[in-house]
Length: 288
Image (cartoon, rainbow, N blue to C red; front, side, top):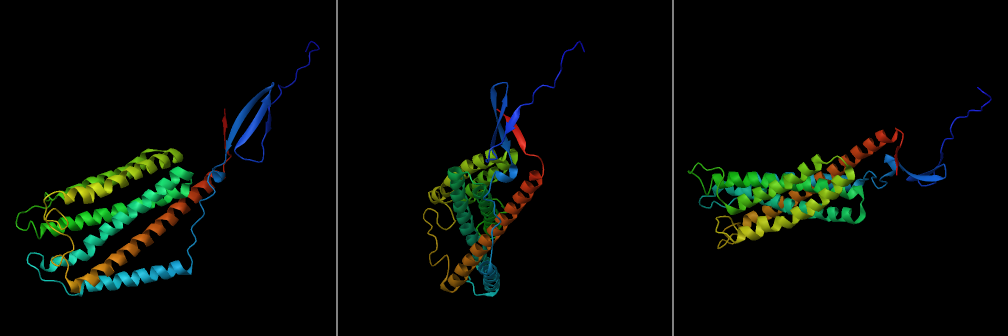
């Protein structure tokens, strides 16, 4: 019209380098940096753990070991001590859960620190799995302790929740551990969730020895290991019960480790499936 030439506005050129994380657009002499986010490329270290013959053999050994240990725990000899009597068999279940609790917390704290140092998602996955196993073991330890105290120290009182300092301190520690999973569930952004969870995991690990060991030992209590009440003396565990106890402890630790590795594998597989699903979509572009 009117001899004037009209042409479509020039489109900015998008130059994508070999790296998938950045691109540059030139338009009108202005350079705009564009971040191209490819979910599949965000974390390359989520390789599915490969468990070979030794791992399968470990699973079989753990299952046989724990089964035999539990048979002896139920049918084996037990010291007929006053008040305790047959409830002494709870020793084979209650105390090993404490070992799993502490070991799981240490493993979780280690991987939390590694995540803060490296930013690798696999450490966040391993930290969460270790804390899950530790927390479950803590719940079992608390429940078995409550039942044990109910039918021994507080028999005839009708009390289920006793005023034992260690029992109350463990309950507080489990609330702290439970808050770890509440925190993870309340944050949507994966990186922020992993970073804040790692910091909180280190805090929860720092409180664990004080709430479950140091403070209870400074308070008067009927629990072994408290003030004026030694732990693992001749009155606590007889010679014919020791080998069953340690066998159960090893068996439950092996079970905890096996469950930990299975949870890690399950969580990594879930993340890989999610990354593959998102990766089929177009990469997101953020203009800065």
